Amino acid sequence: MVGFAGVGTNGDATPGPVVVLATRSEGSEWAMALTRQGHAVALCGAADAAIETSRVLGGCPVLVGEGFFEIPPDRAVALVRAADPTVPLLALLRGHGVLAQRVVDAGADDVLALSDDPVRVSGRLRSLVRHRTPRSPHHFGTLTLDPRARTARAGAAVVELRPREFGVLLHLVHAGGRTVPFEELQDVQWADQQDGEAAMRSCVYRLRKALSDHPDLDVEIETVRNRGYRLRALEAAGAA
Image 1 (tube, helix red, strand yellow):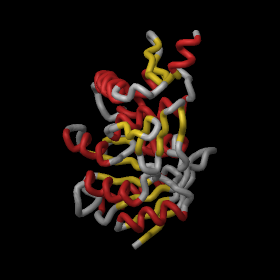
Image 2 (cartoon, rainbow, N blue to C red; image 1 turned 90 degrees about the vertical axis):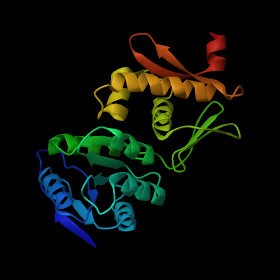
Image 3 (cartoon, rainbow, N blue to C red; image 1 turned 135 degrees about the vertical axis):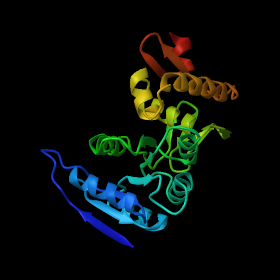
């Protein structure tokens, strides 16, 4: 079943559509809350219907929430991600414990609290659309990222990465050598965690180790002191 909660108005900007995967009242309540923020909201009761609706609506975000569905949110996220690796996917949870990590590992692009203000959730949905994962592979030196398959390769070899590590690397590749401020990376990847800075540094450490396991890879993650991280080509670093 697909039902549209309607279209509201919210100032000058018109928020884009969003699909809410839900069969319970908690999901319907969030659908109405987002409608009041100006979104056109489609309420879907199955993952395949949510993906199909998202495609019809131009690849709009899908919202999954704890208590929205008969199955746990990490399982719901995994179903959506398996059906389409590129759809922007936001999860709303009651807390930020082990379940939040499972949801991220299942493929959610971001996690917020169910208690969050709908204005903030609306803003995060718009942010996910702006940073929508492209459908074609990205190249940086001998590094290739395939956002559709969520895989990284060093030449022909697969670089084994966790979902969050892949997200960080993709963000750095999108920056094209620009220094990504710590705050920007933390807000995109760890907005749900109070210890986001520590989690970010731990993730970058693991990511560097994964890249260093491939000696033919000609890129590295550089820490720009007091500013952030940037991806650079080792050839360019040697030429300097």
